Image (cartoon, rainbow, N blue to C red; front, top):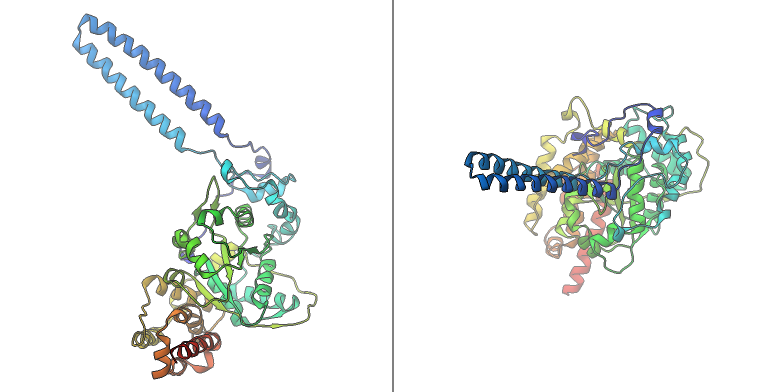
Length: 461
């Protein structure tokens, strides 16, 4: 959980700008290889010397001396093996404080990343990132950065900025989106309205000052390795590593659910736990301040996707663009983490009474379908509700978000919904258990559930 992992991997900034300006590039693989060859030569020379000594002593048949020299030879060989293992395992150092370094130099190729030849990326991948360094400095510089921006204020700022960019969304939608960031690394967004999801996430990327374009994945199936080496995806990872205090979103468009299952299957430990980092090829690592957002209209979910992701059923209204006249305050990654550290977690937790309602709903669903909330899903629901209430929402609205984003979407893949709709009414049961005045997001998903069920009944007929 994000709230339990407060910047554990962010490097401690030491020294002054003058010290940074004297930075020397890391040792290359070839320099390390030279050192290995030198060590091996020295040890072979010493072993040859010891072997010659043993031969001379063997002629004199002095057993104690032979044992001593043999022991020394064994120690030297173990030392040789240990040195080789150490040199081969320790890779070149990467600059830890890259964001400070990029602020001081103007060279667009200054960010030092070593990539294997077979995974090489085009040299101009970072040009867009570095080209926008000026605007990033203007917003994120130490003098202007907001150190104590609350999650509630961030939602207000985001809605205000979105309105000036031509999209009206309510505070509840903003809370759901920001809460999803604390819950999973892969957020699924869909909307009945055409181009609404794309407009929303484009504005979100602008709000977080992301530079990577939307990543369109065509219908061709690709492996996890091919996806990780997609040029735009790697550019987004570069951006996240270059600016560790920026929330970076890689937006995936055109990807089918079957593609997601194939591509993200090896990454589920990373996707389901927001405090994880994920190693890529070469020296690259997907950091903690990196999220993936998939725009999709499909209803089919695999068990792994349902367990590790959240789905936002988006609603909003297009409007005329206007000028943003307020001071824009951005939510940084450190702000997001700091918001989740509170003195009393109990104040932002789902009550026992409401948990019983969720248990009753689970029992109800199990009468018609195979449905079970596993521990991982339960933990995500707790984290989601916690962040939602931190962002200024009420507990009943947080429950609505849990239903709409976590519990109801997996039902869309279950063919047993037909019998459920014939014998009972899911919408009526949910309104019986939960407050009908606080089911804004759940009703959107229920409409899809009902539509799916009607299609299944027509197929049966």
